[in-house]
Length: 423
Image (cartoon, rainbow, N blue to C red; front, side):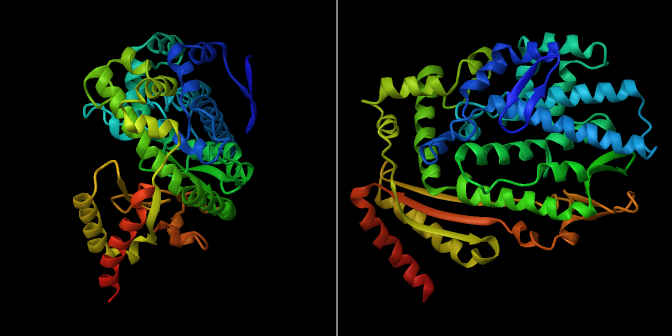
């Protein structure tokens, strides 16, 4: 059985058929897609790619699945036979392995560049699963288990047609899933920070299933609440210190301009191509080559290569419940700057992000805590959390960056508006 050594998880075991997928051109492309976009310009060792992360997600998803199946069989609750278990396990492994296949160059930097008919990297991943050489390889694996490439694509899209599939999706694509468990540890290691560390072994030890609406859902046993809260805290601190880092946000803005220019010149549109072969031709290296070739005529490309980012002149990071009164003034600042300065002189970065969601749009819990003594009884993490309850409030960030030569002028113009606000 093939094995791949991983710095987070040790040896990751694979079947020969899974190795064929990993050796395919669409998957090997992930070696050339950085996991954290331009973060390496701030944290120099954060050069890791989507390739090992995808292997890690498959591995953690499998550990979760095996653990909950072991517990349910031990308790005599689960009515799946071994044939069903093997089929669900293989479907999960393939979906988790391929879930990030559709990322564009520099990963999430390109999230706004997908064609309206595609919209997300998950939809692009599903498209690649169905329309490239991967389809035949997946069909061959699934033939003995009763699934095909279209089933894997549906799981990646989050489109659930069977009750059991909801469980599989929740393992690799939910509020606390294998994806996050891997990337927090991996990003921390390669960025050289400690913020994302948590006790993965303990979290895996308390993961379990509970029955709901004719199917099984994923939850965490109540005696492991502290381990779950530590995972959530790790995510919060990684967002604050790494993913939302002010300089990284500035570099992402500059590089997105470069990528848009590349797409416009190559495909005539500032969107990623829908054609699978054309999309798969795009990776980080193709953007670097374009930036070097166009740096004389494209100021954004030159600025990126020279690492000349704008200077942060104003920053306001607040919890969502404290920014309502100031949003009007933030908008005034944004409009004022737009009227005074050119696009290549000032950048306004404004976003709202909740590091964790305890409930969805229908107010249904997104993270379930299972009563240790009666596994049919569950609670929302919102009810049980003692440490992380406040983290549900979104973080509101309003930052202004400007060219060095006009930075002081921009600062004083902004200060005048906020001086009126404070009165």
